[in-house]
Length: 197
Image (cartoon, rainbow, N blue to C red; front, side):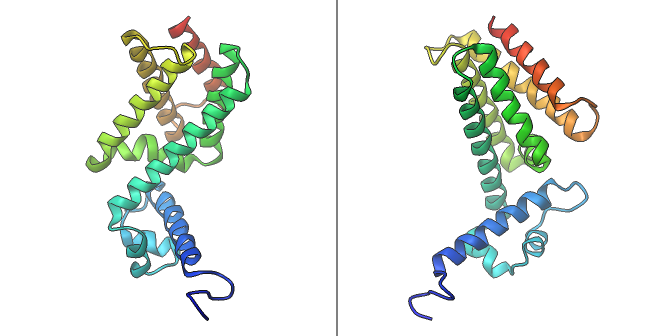
């Protein structure tokens, strides 16, 4: 072994893989209502010791924040890409964006739970969750007017749309709202077009 390379894998690559495992474990533990979210639980889920946890994060709050940011980034990239691929028609664009969002959560409900439900319960992340909702509200307003300068009421409508989506997703993930993903998409698209019609 030379220069930190072991079996063809560098020390940097091994550290990145451990971080990936810890982020995945944090997501799993945090999204499970039956499990208390602790560093010990995360390390157990990842199959790594606390020494490796501290190699990637200063503490549990930093790991939780990293998961929240990753989920938000994935939601934004997927929805914007879907809208762009749908062309110029506003109805097609919003339907594609909401479909991408709902499909993401249907494929991995953990991401919806941590970003929309669990983050709201933690004082250290509640403020960031609010910032992210407002950010997505602004994106909704920009989409409605093709990135033209926003009016104050446009931002209000965008936040109303995103806030409504968050409530629907919360009820859906909690099992309080029994609907098909297609119903969520169709209703959300109608609501959005009604707000900006």
